[in-house]
Length: 390
Image (cartoon, rainbow, N blue to C red; front, side, top):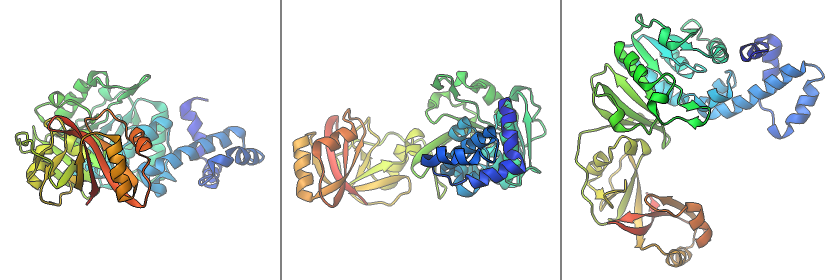
């Protein structure tokens, strides 16, 4: 039985009923459950259902319990698919551009196609892997979106997409040895994806968040997206009104910070407040825009921490009130923590070789108080900054 055929038994009435039965199973009791189910169901079907149930449990973090409980997954699909909230944001942005049809190339298990269809967009979803195509088609059916999602098994480089308003390309960025860092080693290569995106009225190209800024084509707007403080993706937009621009978008809330070409902020002494920019802001090289917004400067020319004397609320950075500044020294920090009764210690580092857990073991915080210590540099010298999140 090949991979594509392995999904088929789970799509039968018996397979669906078995999936419902094992939906909330406890992995610690899997052996006992499997033994019981094999008395009334084929062993292969039981193994397939339990494997799919495990994947669905993992997928809840990305797709939510309701969708994850109805969808079908592969191990790579769970790992590499777009978080639903991010896909929904991208779909809304395409709708705002007037897009009503999208060719989703390298569609994977169909997460992006689902978000587009739910936004009212007609989707051609293409992938060359038979197993993936079968899963994507099953997901369109399971979520009631089959009328809007046409799933095809094909080489994306051979598909005619001229009839679609936009092209969305999500090249594979993982290989047999793990993550691929060379964009030309993507499958398909970045150069092909850029060309395909550029031919459409609108093109959207998903790339690794670590893509060098110099690798971004001049015709594209580069956007870095974070969700709940975690950087999730970088996207190149072609055909929109902001070619050559840079933006950082923070979800939930859809806060968008656009680059204004500001010079690097001045370096200054650590003030009363320390601002930690969101990861998407840092990846987009928009720390200067945050510094301008809060009226602050950098604590060091090589460190993405902003400092200021006044508290300014901004969605693009987390503010901390600094209570102590000291040179690096475990004994001094341990004494201060003991004096303040700090047992809940958050350790953050930027520009320091010390690992947070190593420091926690050395200082052994005890007490009911909470604080954050930053291991970093200020003015070129190692420093520890102790404070609390505002």
